[in-house]
Length: 419
Image (cartoon, rainbow, N blue to C red; front, top):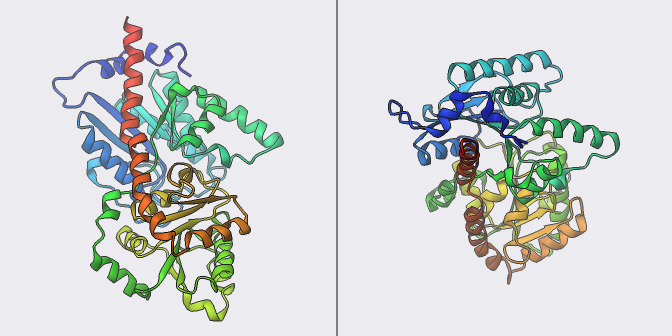
């Protein structure tokens, strides 16, 4: 991990970019972010980089056109987007497209040669293109940080699988200058795989908080009318893909257990996926009107209006490295229930303050938490605390500040070398 400052030894051009001001160019540094696919939250982060770091030229490279959800690609010219995977999904197995993905790495490297970066952030490390880019940066003295949303509690591999991952991942990370994580569980993950703590920087996912906070009463009314949500009802909301790992079935079962005790509460399922019809079949006829299914929503304003029309967000996942919906729920002023493997919950769910955490997979614990959070004497207090919890988190871990800290780290090492 850069123990001998290798990343400055081979490329004087990069060293100059990091340490001198080009009077003919308004930018002091060229930052390249290699991401998998454009999404609303990623575009928001890139726009923040452009607006808040005006002396840095940003190039946003996307290796796939589609993410794991069918978001419409909206890439403003301001973030200087470059697409290397038109028509491709990040969900496709790279094993079946090994040669294609490896060549994609070569194409990205050719772009680096044409327009040299001074710093590279590679989102992820689990495909040949990214491994090739990380290795090339090492070989050519270019500072490269690996960003990842993984967290230590999601490490479930055992035996030879754990052993082989440790060997491969430690080797990949050893070629990077450092790592960027989403939270404290992410920091523990990178430390476990050999990245020194001083080379890990907090660059968490975040949504457009202002969009969520600025939802108008008219927008809330429109969303409620669209999905038939009554004004006088309380709502528990699930937001995510309806797939096994997200455990929407666990929430359905917990809701069925508490429904009679909480007759003024409904369940709102925001999202779609292969489990939808199976889950709907679990709802008894007498409770069918109390469970609303929206399907996938590509409009963040509508999603935010639904949050603002609800009271509790529940995320019962068995595996969830981060979970941006936790940030969204906190910004919308919801109480939050989340399983203990959810990375964002470690930062944004303070037990007894704005929600509760429960053991992943435990129907009993989730049911108990649902009863506590929906208690009439508790819900308003829990909801009102979420904004303050979020504010404290944003003060500790702002993603743009994390990128700045990484750049400062690189510059400080430069100065040490010059001295």
